[in-house]
Amino acid sequence: MKVPLLDLKPQYKSMKKEIDETLIRIAESQYFILGPEVEKMEKAFEEYLNVQKAYGVSSGTDALLLALMAIGIKPGDEVIVPTFSFFATAGVVARLAAIPVFAEIDPVTFNIDPAKIEEKITPKTKAIIPVHLYGQSCDMDAIMGIARKHNLKVVEDGAQAIGVQYKDGKYVGSFGDVGCFSFFPSKNLGCYGDGGLVVTNDNEIAERLHIMRVHGGKPKYYHKVIGGNFRLDALQAAILNVKLPYLEGWSEARRQNAALYVKFFLVSGLAEEEGKVAFDEKNKVLLPKAVYKSDTVTNYHIYNQFCIRVQKRDELRKFLTENEIASEIYYPVSFHEQECFSDLGYKKGDFPLAEAAESTCIALPIFPELTEEQLQYVVSKIKEFFDKN
Ligand SMILES: *Cc1c(COP(=O)(O)O)cnc(C)c1O
Image (cartoon, rainbow, N blue to C red; front, side, top):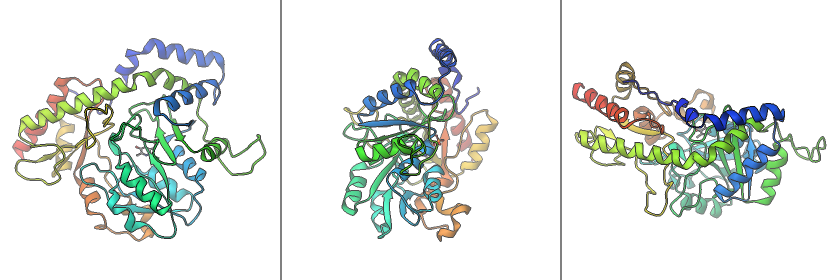
């Protein structure tokens, strides 16, 4: 049985007519950049996420870069980021000649550990970028408390977490000064190319995001500030306008898949419960845990990824590949060990929990259209691997 990591074709098939009509409509309009489709999409996200302003931008990476520019990050400023995330989180800081300062993660959620943030704060610290990794919220109460106490800005990296709610139901991206999202095709809500979104509840920041998206000109060709080309295509916005109403259904299907994985792993005897952080005879597989799960909040986790942890990770991955089960490692090298950041003075051993995650994490297929049989097959093959190893 073949189990791909992600297959977007069934999703397209399920909405082919709407999408095809949209593609043709955009072709016929010959209106390609920003414009009414983008404005319609921005309105929809303002309502959905309950934020004052949303702006469509060219990618999730550009959303982060634009956000840092809009809050005024300058060369030499320090920005605290988790050491365990997709490269863009730290890359955008360095691209502004600011200094990414790495912080340790929580071993259960893989998100930045708020208790490890304060020790990283210096007089040069200007901002924190919490990343809602794999599709669950960071501890935003704690993070916003620290930010307020030290007068720091917060830019949320919600690239993997569109529509995720924190414990009180508030959507991620609406806590900090700017929330950033990605519509890269493999995210829970993907467009047909690159796309992203910035959101804010601050009028001044909103104005800067808006004009910096188009090189900082206002009026056009008169530049008070320096921005860039961070524009979104009308085509991408139109696709998102079609897909947004389906997002919660897809996220729910991912949650159901996650629940099935958990059930099958518990039955297999490879794991005792969710959220364990130490391996032993009864926990050869460490399962993820949705820490803000409650009866009142639906989107406490959207499982952009379902990452388990195992000790012989690379051997398991090879075995799964041989059995036509795809998997991925998010992420094999933490920031503090990346060659491009070697001049920042970190060394292996600085963040043991992130290093434990990078060497044991493996993401299993979790996309909405997977069948129960496929999920069961994945777990049965992992069980077979452990029976032999
Ligand atoms: C995908 C991702 C990004 C970047 O988004 P792009 O749209 O690919 O530029 C940034 N941060 C995280 C955590 C991501 O997963």
